[in-house]
Every structure is written in C-alpha cells, then in structure tokens.
Length: 196
Image 1 (cartoon, rainbow, N blue to C red):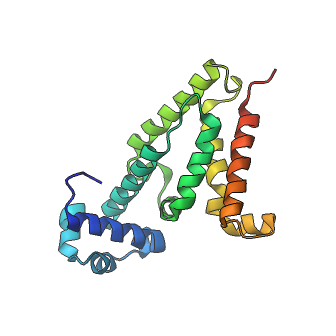
Image 2: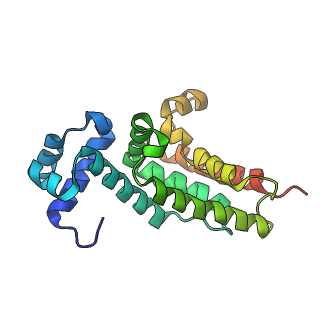
Image 3: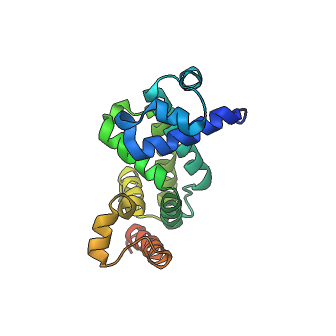
C-alpha cells in the first residue's frame, strides 16, 4: 500500500482483502466493501476504479507484502520453501486471493502480469545463480525448479482437505505445520542438490 495512503484508503483495502478472499472477484460486492470500510461506494470508485481494478490493487499489495518478507536468494534456496510456507500459512487471505484469481482469469489477463513475470524471473535468476555456485543441480531447468518450490510450499495450504485425508489428521495445528515446514526444507535440499 502506498505510504501516503489515507486512513480511508487503508480501511477500503483491508475490507477489500476480506471481501475478495471470501467471495472472489465475481462474488465480491462493492457495497459490502464500503460497509466494512465505513466508506461510501463513491470513495472506492474514486480511489481504486471498478471492482476488477480494485482486485488487482488488492492482490498486488498482498504480493508486495509477501515479496518484502520472503526473499529467494541463491545461498538459501531450501530455506525459501520454509519461509514461503510460513508466510502463506499465516496469511490465508493471500492463498484465497490467488485461488480466486486462478479460477476467474486467464493466465495472460491476471493483474500486473508483466511486473509479476519480471519478479518471478528474478527468482529464476537466483536459482540459476545457485546452479553456477554448485548449490543446485545444474541439469534442472531453473524455471521448473521455481514452479516446484512454490508448489511444494503452498500445496497443502491450497488443498487442506486433501492434506488432512492423506496425513490422517488436521494439518493446521502448530505441531503439524512445524513438521510440514521441516519436511519441505529437507525435501527441497535433497531434491535440488547436485548429483555426485
């Protein structure tokens, strides 16, 4: 969110996160966002545009927050998986926003497509650097490694019912999350290490 955001803008964004996470793009209602934010609908349209634009702003803000907290570095690839898992587990609204985006929009029409692609390319470049440093198997396609890392970190959060059925117990307890995190970091390390 911009540093100069007014209290009204902050309330609108917070209300929009909750609304879009719960109802998705098509199910969200600007009047409910306005009521939650204690703002009028006109303020929403004036500050953020239509509902589709507001969703894009909300998602971009949530992804910016993630990027500031979780960084993929060439010397810490396995740890990235654990940190991404932690962040997404603590921010289920982000998980839901990304799910709604996937259900509602074609890949090439997602908000901020070019900027997000550039951000992911920087992560792919970090994996390629890890390969040059001998930390990641150089025979692996760094783009596919990036997809794998994100999938590993987030999958059980996207399908908790499947994780519960397979694990035999709810996976959202602190103990289960700690176990899952440790498993993910170890698995990433073993999968990616160069073959001797």
